[in-house]
Length: 129
Image 1: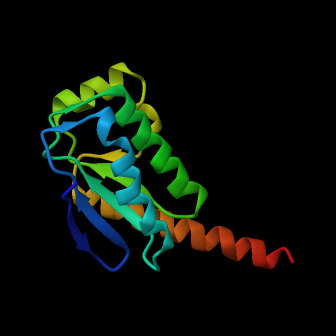
Image 2: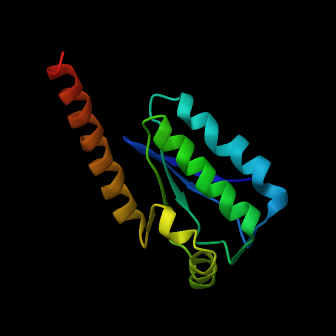
Image 3: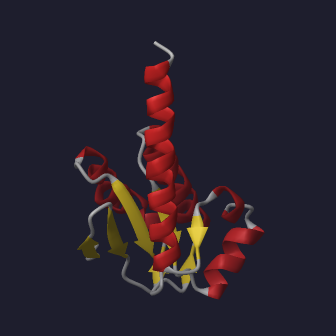
């Protein structure tokens, strides 16, 4: 899978190639996205502007990947979803469990807020010792 990667200070902006995100791509998707959890900059903004269709297995894979990010103290935000993909995810009741924003700028804001939240929560843990 040829992805476009733009590394910022707090996150990696990764654009998936289109037009389809299918079940046959789920393993490749995990292999592409999960290694970022080992980096100093762990947060990922996934840009889906070129994806016109997605199937259930691929959508569920994105939910599972997002969950792994949050379990590892990192942010995973999806942005620029095409209307048909958004409607499909909503119909499958997956959109409500995904961290989705309309624009990359809003995704960046979410990453920053979550970073601050994690810092505050970690600070609270230290004060309880």
